[in-house]
Image (cartoon, rainbow, N blue to C red; front, side, top):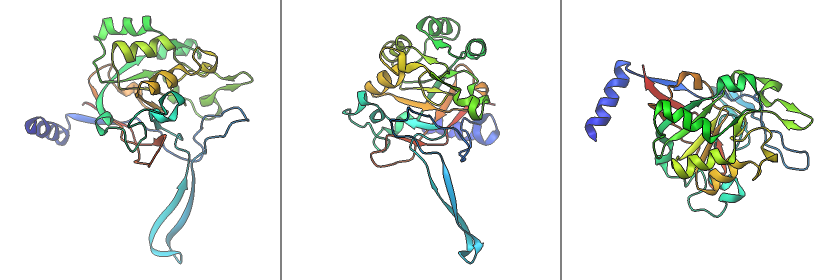
Length: 258
């Protein structure tokens, strides 16, 4: 095991392994999910300067920031959803740290999404991907690449009178990944792990319901998935260790062959 880590360290230093940043910059303009008005809302990122080498602090620069647990590129813990509320180790401070460093598979749906903003990932599509790239390894993360991260502002949320319109998986796809492939988590480039119209699915928001009900995790608002291979990358995604946290903004990275 020591030799494995030494080889990895040597490859990193030699430039044989590249680190890809999968995170959007956290700033006040980054969109957050919008719920119906009768519900509470997720807070955007806000920042205020405490001092900057001035009378408030002559030798230091620092700021205070506030945001919701599910703002920007963020991690969903099982307790985030009602289906996971009674599970053990379901908050960001108790999730086993092994979940944060895992292989990741990337299922490319970008061509389909370019033709249909409401594209739904199905079991058939996943199985076709596996025929080309091999079965998804047990314990891996799976990302749904849509190139949605290239959108910004109002186009990113894509809200209409009937709600948001964005891609995501159906219930059968999520259950296949959990029960047939035993994935540890699922990630998307959109503001949530579910499709924009998933409130009308059965059950509503199936990615959230099934992932968190089975003690699995979510990542959303990911970036640069077009820089990852279908298989072979290693994901690094530790959230902030917030006591009883339902989620957390974080810096998501992946190690890939240079």
